[in-house]
Amino acid sequence: FSTAIEMGLGMGVAIILNNLNNRFSKIMRVALIFPLMVAPVTATIIWQLMLNNSVGIIEKFLNIFGIVGFPWAASPKTALMTAVMIDVWVNTSFCMLLVLAGLQSLPKSPFESAKIDGGSTMFNLRNLTLPMLKPSLYIALLFRLMAALQEYAVIFALTKGGPGDTLMNLSLTAYQTGFQFQKFGYALPYILVLWVFINIIAKQIVKRQRAAQKQAAGLEE
Image 1 (cartoon, rainbow, N blue to C red):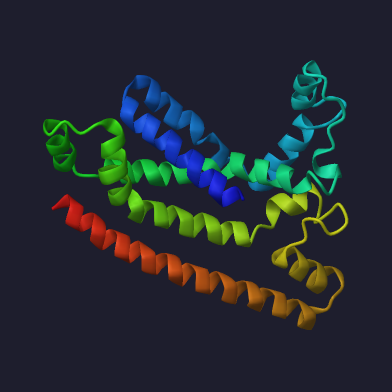
Image 2: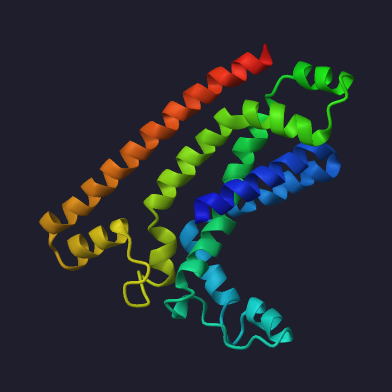
């Protein structure tokens, strides 16, 4: 969930900033990098304070619309949404930077030719920008998906896997089994399963990234 949202938001913001290309966009680039400078645990604690039912600024905002005492991470129904929301705030900037770097490295000649031929903005986006941008998108997807599958800091700082076992993933289960229950032999299989799963996904993404790179090279020519 978090990777899909981060990729969508990151790509959208990067395209907007790249198209503006003015002083305002440069200021926004600096401002949007700020979440990357905050440690995930620190960011989670900040969000917990903002979501607090007594003093949280977000809770006060929701009260204006008649929403009082929203459970956030305290309920199994909304805990995952809360964790995803915090992860998106922390890591969307990373996707945005990678996509923005990819956009700024695209050659100008195909777009100039399309402009002469009367190509619309949507035509350029669909047939030129996105195909040539695919290698950068796959790189962003690879890094973020690998990190999301191993997520530990946000979940541990938020609820330590709760309520109950709602947010228990392989990383957190391995930590709990190995370090809290002192059963390192039982903890190892969780790490191995996670490693195999990530390895398979990473190989597939790299394979598609190489194919997209060849396709993009053909369009640039």
